[in-house]
Image 1 (tube, rainbow, N blue to C red):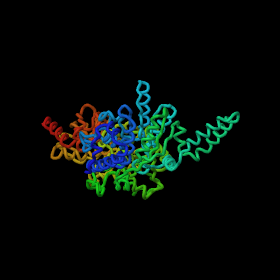
Image 2: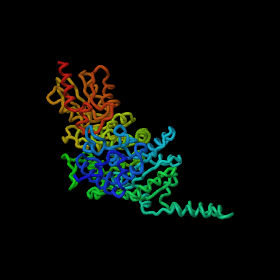
Image 3: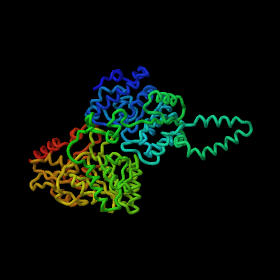
Image 4: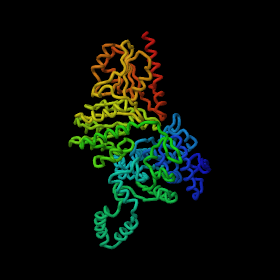
Length: 617
């Protein structure tokens, strides 16, 4: 690793202020080398952090954390902030068990003012903190650092609308790199493109108005006429009108890699006693050629070789890829099939569909609520919409699922990607809540494949239904195994029957593999609960009549989950022991480590099976 003498001298934000101004670009280069070296060994969000190095240095040069609050949105651009607030020495443990989180986390540092892992939250949180501090006598500044991708989320607009009229001195730094995870889409992105190339003439406007108003007698009338004319033409000439109409003073665009210019504009914003938006234009992946050329790949990346960019991969095709490939094959036979994603074409495997059927592919930006209701509208008009969304992001659209889809019984298919424990992204990204919240929705069918063959078979089955269907599958690679029985709504598969078995083990999704490992060589019958809702009533009745103890395994929270549903159906006559995720949020670690932490790994389940078998004997 290259020497980093300036970076090594930083233990807190105060140390940044002691570095000579002309050496700050040198510090930026050291930070970039440090980031590439560390993230190559742990995996993480690289390209976004390479793009905010100078911006973060400038923020800590001008503001005084933790007295001043810096709030990052989405949070994956906060690595540099963590490095500059005393956590550089811990970066070898980034996203690892017992290490530092990949996102801002209040319990980790006093410099992390607000925890965040989902987009579009920073302005709301910052305004709330600012209002509370003013009410309670605080005097610090509050800065929301948000990405242009986050602006595609409705929550951000709601907050900007409120903040602008509040007159509170909120500072919003818009980190504009033309990317969220994939390239940004929509009218707002085109608007920002115009702003990047525009020249502000606020000073001209101010001077003209002042001159007209000073003219005796006719001055005010001329000013009023000019104002009406200005309001007619400004929408064609001044791209920053959006933010100014919301009530913000707009500063920029400013080169997000020019530390001197950034410091100057941040100081100016600090002096203004009003809502301010600073528009900083940055380059995602800045300083590392491979990330600059392919920022989407290096947005969230596993361990990789620095020289080649090649990622260390486990063998096999991912579940997301199977989903996307199968959907594209079905779309070739049915022109009514459309695919929808919320800024995640690569992550959900829909990039294949996008390439083959661009006119039937819709990326709506970071707007899950809109994606779900738009899908409802398409279904109501006769199309066959398929929305692929990460489990952790789908929970943001619960109201739309209930109100717009389920209450109308509309046939929309959801690919619930990254369901269950997700590993190193930790608490904010765990997909463990979808079983519980989807089960509450009227008419919602929930499918859970144990193999990639089942996943592929479930997609045409879901598309053939007359109501909503969610197919939940984990991050990574499910088992490969040929289908021995057809996948049917409301039916399970008995994959191992032991006539003299003492226990029935019901497992769902990737936990079927865990069940097979845990019960190997034991007198235990195993059932693949392919359909979590509706459940297999006939098989449940047989289990109830046999009276054998039942174990349930699910990759989700126990409260409101599959195990609770089984208990409710079977009643108190049969003993039911459920394995799954408890109420305590699960920290970042590998999925295997998280399984063990939650007591749902094969060894723990086998130990419980043996205890029960010994008791029965």
